[in-house]
Image (cartoon, rainbow over all chains, first blue to last red; front, top):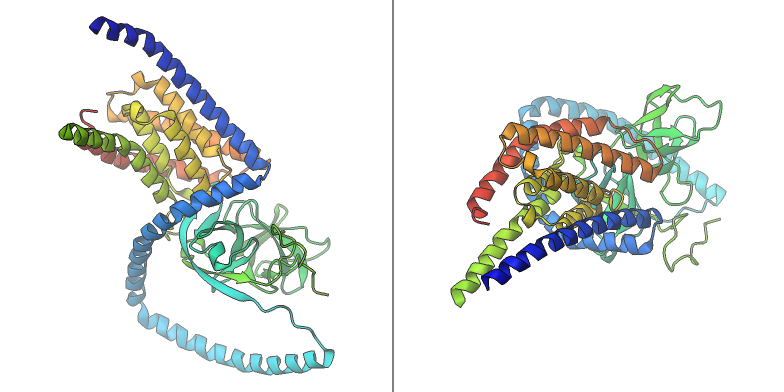
Length: 293
Length: 171
């Protein structure tokens, strides 16, 4: 018996070694194959991603809550420290905003009257969906968030995601209870925008840094630091006029923009359902996508 | 019969903990911490787990577990599927091959080993993602991520070592 064991050990050790080596090589090959499959944008890969995300989402949701609460407590403490100064600043803001409010009321009335004269057809009404961030993933290579709503709440691809400050990004893949939001700073993000003061069209292209760039501007257009950037609504995916950021620097190397939304402050976001599906096709719903005339 | 069953279940649970800890670190890595600038330079926590267990208990961290950890990492961070799996498997392969230089060595050697391995892993990761998107990716965040990882490593290793002594002493 002992002899046999020693014998089998002597034979089996190299075999197990060999098996281990082959498994290892096979797994590396499988990982490369997955990369290629992902490059081909296969539906199956996307579904696999969505299903795994769905499975992990409840855990992330539970774990992310205490972290958020802890941060909230620290934030409260900080606010308490300079409550007096902030109060004074807010009083000033209220005065200034009340003036703006009266201006806005006058303009609203005028706008309505002019629209009636022109028989203007208003665009589709947007509906909102509020969600909580459960993962802020990315590091150096990808800028995206996971939020705790999914197809069961009515999420579809391409919906604009905003906070009170401005545009966060767009929906890029969803499962039944979790959704991936591609931030405007991600390498793959391209958003049609307007330079507000001159109404110049441009594309906001993310580059995995904190400052996305403005590209494809018409030649001979002057853009200066401090110009506000808003969504243009071209392509029919996003509503018009969502605030995005301000031009940060203009140089030979390109035009960079500072987003209004700070990534570390994102906790609750709103997903805007604009009612239009635009250029991003949905499976099985392509026929009813007549663009408004 | 019964005690043997419970003993086996106990051993099984203990054996599962290296993977469990790695899984927890992958989740921790994507938690929204709301610290300014943190999300871009989040330290490579899962890599530390794989490094530690590949050095100390490679039999509890088989290659397919490393592969799965990489896939989960890719899915949660939204990077191209397979990239982290390749990087993790690469680190695992190098460590298992060179274990004799690292086992039972002083902490400084282990730390130095990690600094080399993490630099290689970051470089390979950068290369793979750059090739995938056919563009050159800005590497500044990567460098700070690397430094932060080196700083966090002693703390995490201390926790792993305690864990190993407490639960995996005889395994």
